[in-house]
Every structure is written in structure tokens, then in C-alpha cells.
Length: 405
Image (cartoon, rainbow, N blue to C red; front, side, top):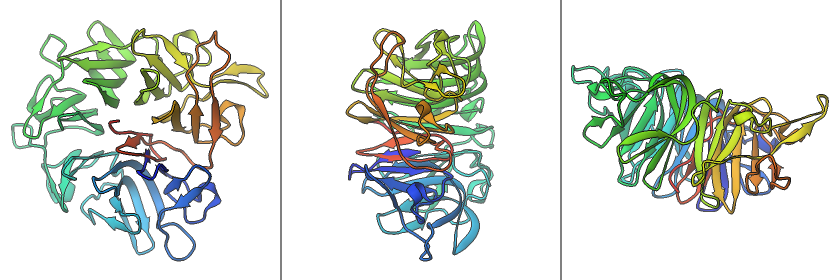
């Protein structure tokens, strides 16, 4: 995951050690535009966290950084922990021994009152059998988001992503069906603070989506954009696509059969009015450069690539992420885009591993000048999401994520 702070720096989290060869920059670090900086240490030359992975970042109203992750351990606590806060000087465990599942927290969003929503493959949160997969944290206490109407947990399977709209409504996506007992609330649902509701239906009493999962969401200007993975929608099955929810209904942003594998993250590029898409797909719409990352013009539905090169050894043009393992993408202003994943040697640059910065417009196959990519210095996957509050942060380990701009 990655976010930008009020100081203009980028913050990243993931599974990495020694970002930029800084011995204390483990699992979470700051990029100041020139070098990586550690956030805390163990007092013995290593990072505060000595194992585990960071998955998600977001900001409180006071500018503190919230970190969600899995199996995060420190020199002083060898048990698996999942939720921490950085105040600029010190890390605080917000949920000591309250989140025991080894898979940890997949996503976090901070509400306007600084309460925190969390999502992940979590069950019996804080020992409560009604709090599964999604919960609200307020001053050290976890609470359920209602139940399923029969005394069970509101969700019956994993929640993967969270997003807030402009009115503070929470959108939850994942693998679940019938959220809060609502028959049409499958794979995605809205929580308004007191009740669950569906976004749309298939016309036959179930949700618009069925199948595997909704993995990515981005709210922008009254529309919720969705990344769907191996789902069935009315009249089509086995779809990996990008959809938009607005005015009570869901529709495709582009032909849902153009994308051939998972969509892992979404963000909005304000400089170009484009939706940024990161995932495991390749050759979108037959374009050999459209691997792992694309942008979609929301006015015309045209598809653009970001990067691409001729790779030594195979002497062939391919996309920036020719292995198509993008996990995170974030627009960070001035036409710049942060991108993270499992890639190595992005754009045929041996220094460009796991995370990169794009500074230029996306290009279509007929154009030859499309900006450039700058390498950073991470040694393991950047897999979480980017979070943009008044700022942006960067995280690695599960996917990149951002908040509302």
C-alpha cells in the first residue's frame, strides 16, 4: 500500500526489508523523493517490525498513519499483530491480541470521527462470534456492523476492500453473499451506519454479481468504480472487468470481455479524467503493451497503456509489467502515477523492481512519447493499495490502495 503525507512524502508498506538499503526500513518506509527513510526502529539497527507484511495504509484527521497487516511482529512482541498507528515518532498497537487470525487485516479506512473500519479474512474479532470479516474500531473497542438477521455475523465470507463515499457511507467488497441478510447484497454491499443494502440486482432476486470476488473499488464524483474477478453478470459469465455504480445501477465501463484476468486496484487520474487500472491481465483489447496497467478515458472509453519496452533476450515489445502481476496503483498529482506489484525489471530497467513512478500521460499504441518511469528501491512485493487523504502513502505486500482525492 502507498499513501502521501501532508509533508508531500510517500509512505509504503509491504513484505520488504531494508528499503533503499536502509537497515531500519522494514515493512513500512517513507520515500522523500530522493531516498527511503525508516519509520521507527528496534534500537539495534533493524526496523520496528521484524516480520510479517503490511497490507493497507490510511490517515487520521491528525495526520497519524494507520497500518493494517498480517503477522506483524516486533522485537518485544513475538505474537501476530495486525493494526498499528504511527504518530510521527512512535508505533502503537491499536488492537493487542484482539485480531488473532494469521491472515490479518487486508484493508483499513479511517472515518471522519477517526474510528477505523477494517476488513480481511478475520473471524471472531476480539473473541466475538458476531464480528467476522469486517468491523469498526473506536478507541480500542471493536463493534459489529449489525448481523445477518438471524443472530449470525453480517458477512459470511471474506471482505477484501473498503471505500467511503462523500456522505460517509461505507462500501465493502469481497467474496461474501447476502450481506446483512440482504439477498441482493452479493460480493459488494453498502453500510450506511445502521443497515446493509445492495447496489443492484440480477433481476432474479440475487445480486448483480455472482462468482468469485470484487477486489477493487474507487469512489469518484458520485460514482463507485469496481474491479470484478471471475464473476457472472446478467448475460455473461467468467468476467474480469471494470464496472461503475451510479444512480442505483451498475454498468460496464468498457467491454467486459476485453480484460482476461484479475483487476486488483483502481484509482482516478484527475489530470486526464481517466480511470487507472492495475491487475494480472495482459494484452487488453489485443494490445501487447497493455499488461498489468492501463488507463481508461471516462469520456470516450478509450484504453491507454502506461510504459512498455523491447526486452533483451526475447527481442520483443511488451508492457511495462510483462509478467502482469500488478497489485496497486495511485494517482499522486501532476500527472504522476505510483505503481506497485510483483514485477521485476519494469520497462526493461534492471533497477525498476516492485514499485515505480510514472510521470507522463498514458499512450495508445500509435503514439511514441508517453512519459517516463523512475525506479525506487524496494526488495520485495508492493502489493497493497495507495491511500490518499490530504496526502498519499505507499505500501507493499498485498496491493496498492488510495483514498478519496
